[in-house]
Image (tube, rainbow, N blue to C red; front, side, top):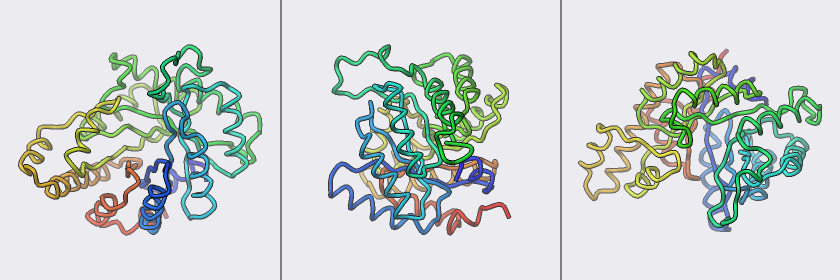
Length: 306
């Protein structure tokens, strides 16, 4: 189903992100989580793409399996790094043949073990270039669906790590939208004011496509540290830090605080008529299911426009 139709069918979409497992054990854990989350009828799910295309086949296999063996509508990530036009053409052809309807087009990170990587060797220097190529694929009629792939791009409420100039950042985002993007999915954030300000700046920049809020609840102290070390960073409001500090060494208390905080974020975003909420699940289901329960949402179908 084209992402425009999905977003048009719901007052607020709810969606999940998974990453492709690399071992048999992690595969079992992922599919156990999927089995627990599938009954919540998410509007769609996304599947990540390893740095430099390092999980190309794993991503493809997971996407196709979700498409064929579950009721979920998968959206694969696709990145610019370490790719030439022929690589992307082949990937798009395979997804089109498998009946995949949407792609999330990202700049991407270089693989850590690729010491000789040179960005200038990539065929696509920016995500906007990748969006244009996918749109060109759509226009060629290579996809069986009349509209071709729906295209998503990333947004950064706290600011893009590679673009300190916030004015220039919006110009780059507008370029991606003008190239053919259908929706924006944001990086995680912990202060709704950052998201709401980002949404307002999008309006000022003439960006009118739906914006989905990325959400990753804190479930452990170590996880919180990892989030802070992500390439895009993570800005923790003092209110959240104080609550976490009161937990001391009680990791279960940290988890409860993190889930409660994320639930409050989601509730406020729904009140602010956010287009969608996208949960970065880390291939686990418990936190997402608890947030659903606290929000009183049995499944995403209740938010469909009728």
